[in-house]
Length: 107
Length: 119
Image (cartoon, rainbow over all chains, first blue to last red; front, side, top):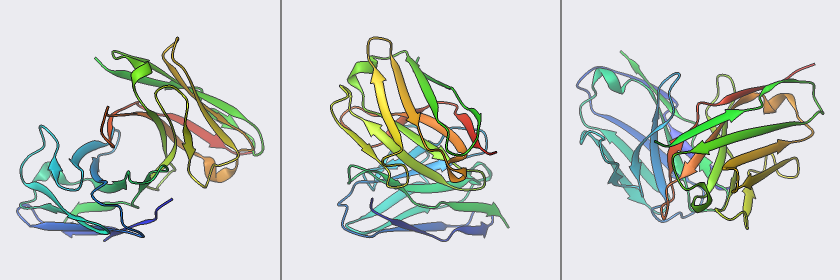
C-alpha cells in the first residue's frame, strides 16, 4: 500500500471561494492520481484522472495538478452543488489507496 | 446501461464468514478489471481488492490480506468477495466498482451492500 495523506480533513467555505485540497503520496506515483467527489447516498463521481485530466462532463472550475508525490485539487469558484466530500486515490501500485477525504462544508 | 448490483450483506458474528456478490450487466464483464471498495460508518473510502479481467491476478489491501478472497465468474457476469474471519472493523458498506478499460480509475460503482460484524 502507498499511504496517501490528504489535507485538510475538512474546511468551511463560502460560495464563490477558491478551494484547494492537497494529497501527498508516501512515494513517487508519477501522475497516477485521481480525484472523486462523494455526496451522501450517491456513488463517488470521478472529477480528475491522471492528476490533471478533467473527466468529461465535469465543470471547468475543477482542476488538478501535481506529479510525483504532491497533488492538488482546486475548485476555482465554489458553487452550492460542490459541498461534498472529496477523495484522492492513487492507482500507481497494485493495491490502490484512497486519501482519508476532505469534507467541504458551507461557511 | 452499465449496472452493478451488490448482494449478500447482513449481520454476522465476529470470526464468521460471508460472501458478497456483484451482478454486472450492460457491458462485456470479462473485459474489465473489477474492484471492491468499502466505507465504514463515519469513515472514508477504503480500497479492498481487485481482480484482473481474466482472474489471473488479484491484489488486496493489507487490512484484509489472508482473510478475504476476490473472485469472478465471467460466464455469469458476477464478481465475488469471500470474507472470512470477520472482525468488527470490517463493518462497512461494500461496493463493487469497474475500472475503466486501459485507464486506472473507477468509472462505475454499485449501490453497495452493508456488512455488519457484531455479536
